[in-house]
Every structure is written in C-alpha cells, then in structure tokens.
Amino acid sequence: MPDRQSFLMKKALIFLLAVLASGLIVLLALVAIEFFEPLNTVSFLSPPKPFYMKGAVPEVQTKDIMGQKEVVDGESRVLFFRGISFPIKKGQEADLEVLKLAKDAGMNAIILMVSWKDLEPLPLKIDLDFVLRLREIVRKAGELGLRVVISTDMFLENQDILDAVSSFAIRPKRFGLSPDFLWKIRFLQDFLENEFTPDDLTLQDHLISVFVKLAETLQRERNLLGYSPFLSFDLPSSFLEKTLFQNPETCSNALLDFYERFATALRAKDWEAIMFFAVPESALNAQFGRLEDAVFLVPPSLPCLEKGDCIVPLKPFGLFISRRTQQKVPAETLLDALENIRPSVLFFDLPDDKHCSVFRFSRPYPQSVSGAMPKFSVKDNTFSLRFLESGNLYESRVFVPS
Image (cartoon, rainbow, N blue to C red; front, top):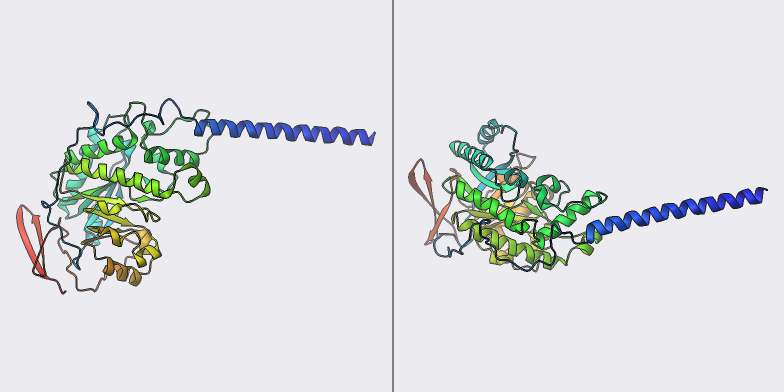
C-alpha cells in the first residue's frame, strides 16, 4: 500500500511539473510571438521613404552654412556656461521662481526638458498651445539673462523612457505579457531602425517634425542656444540587448544618420541653432566627426576622457559635461582632458557639489560674464566675443596666449 501511494504521489508530482513546464513554454511562446513577430502597426519590410512627405513633415532643403557662421578653430578658446535642468510637464504650472533662483545662484543656462508625448500626443497633431507656453518660458528665462537648451526627457538608458514617448510610437502589446524592459528594448530598436508608425511616417521623422515646429516658433528668441533630441544614449551592453540589437557600430552609424537629418531639418528653420548630441560611450568607430558644428555630450568614461578615443577625433564645437561625468571623473583629470581636447564652448551641468572645482577653472582662457549667445571671430591671436543685448551690439576682445 505505501508503495502504491508513493507511486501515485510521484506520478502526481510529475504531472504537476509537466503542467507547469507546459504553461511556462506557452507563456514564453506568447512573449516571443508578441515581441519578435512583426505587427501590422509597424512594418519591418517597408521600403525606404524620403524624409519629407506631403502634408506631414515640412519639406527640408539642405542649407549650406559653412562659411556663414563664424566659429573658432578650437585652439585654446573656451566659453563657459553653467546650467540646471528644468523639466516642464503639460497640465502642470511651471515653477518660474526656479528660474530666478537659478539666476541668483550664478547660473546662466537652463536645459528645458519636455516630453515627446506632451508635444505630439497624437500622430502629426502637435500641441501648439503647449509650444506657445514653452515660448513664454523661454522669454521669461531671457528676461533673467538665462540661455536655454531644449531637450526631450528621453534618457535612452532608462526604463522610464516608455513614460516619455507618445503612445503611437510604441508597439501595442499583443497579449500584454512582455515586461516593460523588453518593450523598452523594442522601442529603441524600432527607433534606430527608423521603423514606420501606423500613419506611414517613421519614428525619427515624427520626432524631427516636433523639433521643426519648435524651431519655427522659437527661432527669433535670442537667448535660445539650441536643441537636443535626448541627453544620453547608451549602446547595447547586456547579452540580451546585443542579441536583439545589431552590433554597436551599426547602432552608432544609425544614430549618426539620425543626428545629421535632425540637424539639417532644424538648421533649415534656424541656422544659428546649436545641436547638442549624446555620443555613446562605446561609439568608437562611427564617423561622428561629420557633425562639426555640434556640441557633444561627454559620456562619463575616464579612459574616453583621458585618451580621447571618442572625443578628440571629433574636433567638436563644444562639449557638455553632465552631472554624472563630473561625479565619476576627478575634477583635475577632467580639466586636464578638456585642455587637451580644446573645444570652443563648454557647458557644465550643475553638480550636487556646488563648490566643485570644475567651476573654478584657472587656465588663462576667456570667460563670458554675460552668458550671451557667442559669435566668434579670431584674428591675430585675439578672441572676439560679439553678442546682442537689449538690442545693442557689444564686442569684447580678449588676448589669448599661444
């Protein structure tokens, strides 16, 4: 009797394990179908289409700005900006008192961070009321002497990206079983591969069209420095990401292509706007040097800063030193690296330590006290900073040691 009872218990246990295994297999199969199978809403096989489409994104003509914009050659001439990030959400009153506090604290720049979904809640339906509200905030910042960079709040290394993206830009879950971290990877893959949304416009072109509308609206605001599609971008690093994505070099080149189209579209509307582009930490082989007039966001990689593997060949117009970089890289090491790179413009995000020595840069470089939009001209080893203030043109010349 005990043997029979033991036999039945073993069979019951085996049956239970088989049921659980079958359920797990079915669950994994559903997730795989949901995640990997191309859906009707986004076509992986759609033929390439031009950037401009009738009735959608404004037609963009490439405008040659070489020679029209006076830019220094990066030889020991540096202009400094300090700033804070200032998030703006639709439906919430902006705390404009923060702008005054930032000015009183010695800041002269802000990063105005907005959500893609707030700007374009529905396909090709840009919220003009929200855009005009942003313009008022930019003007308020200008009254306080603050420069403004506009960026989305999409940090492309953060699972919260799904909360910052318009719903039409995200594949609908077929069974609702896939975890969000897989759907984040799915969105990044779709974005880099420039997949089509249900309205036959690509993800990248949707985002570009939003910034084109911003550039059209804000091009006359003299305190507006420029735009950034996002402030950070990490290439695939985990085994799963590397399995789902293409190799890092391919991703870097896809990101570079997007940056070039982004810059071309916005400069057709506002050719003086500065582009702020995140350079992935491991993007060593992509030809980011083609983006000569951009400000590059420095990844917090000490070898990258010391050796210049992904920065020095770029000869950037400027560098943005994020808070995370300042926290990870010792101040003196950072300053020595920047002295070797010699960009024309430096932007420092405000660190947690407000007394960080990064802000006490003692090298014999000129420093802007006005924080005005720079116009550069270099003759006979002198640095000429020209800026408009209260409708008047001012010029300040500083001798730059060789």
